[in-house]
Length: 382
Image 1 (tube, rainbow, N blue to C red):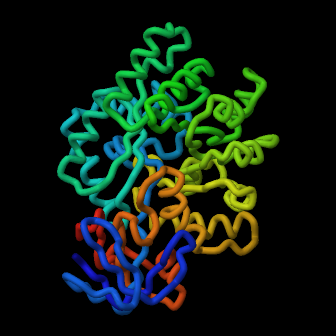
Image 2 (spheres, rainbow, N blue to C red):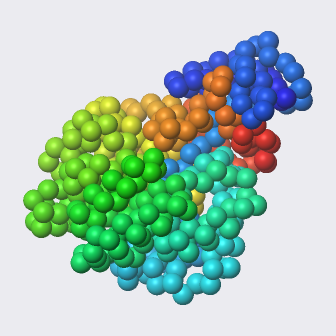
Image 3 (cartoon, rainbow, N blue to C red):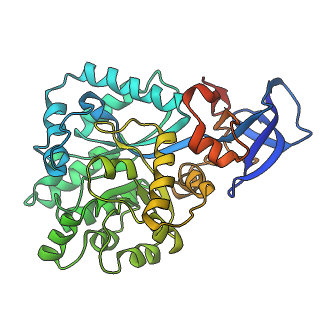
């Protein structure tokens, strides 16, 4: 048992600021109250206890290509199969990939992230690489695979189903690149088989305006509409909605992962976070491609808060940004983590309280050196 004492706790799904102790046993939070006190004691005076972060979208393999391609167009950098990142990945030995991926996982832990969703290129071999890389790193990964054959518009149905089922045997779901690279028929097959397996399907949509216009011109629908029609569980980016895309996403109940720093790095726009929030869309945050972003959710939250306020020229609550990296992600992904409540997994961070506002203290002020402890599944990791 562990008791964390005398802290400011961001409690429950609303991240309510309370003064309390937290009792942890067998990896779970069993009591949050001023009276809790058993087992090993951790003194957390002048500290904040917050849920550990969930990085809902990252391309971990691209750690080997950091800051490559700067100044090139988004198509030149990341469009499969000939983008700069794809060429680098193809030329890099698996042992080098593993070392870089391990380093990025430790960086996530040091900055308070205990769960991440990786969009994994390379088919089953790519999945094996991340599984090997994470063997000795105490971080929770959700791996979404893809296969090069998905890009073939003429792939026969039997071959497609074979590839999908092979992937689903070894990962947590499937995430093709985008609807500019696969057919609607392939998208529907992926979603159907993934759903039957009880796993997660995700896809990039509306990352920039041109892909939306291309989709309208060739299919008569936006990428967002096509992804909703296919039934994907999770949409990534939604930086450039057109027509009634946002209302359609809200109506479908599909969560969206926004990656504002990535969109800024690639000069493709600012996601309409406030508008999505007002429509009731579940918004998650991800750091996206390590090729041009560190996997640091503290940086992602700060950028997201400030760019959203600047874009709309209006106030946006900081606690809602933290929810995107914790509570909302946990709920949207059906994880028993993301919030501090009795019965939840003990995935927590203990950080210095630097200012009187605990939400802004985390977003604006916290550096890795201010994180006193990272706790995952009730175990003190760092």
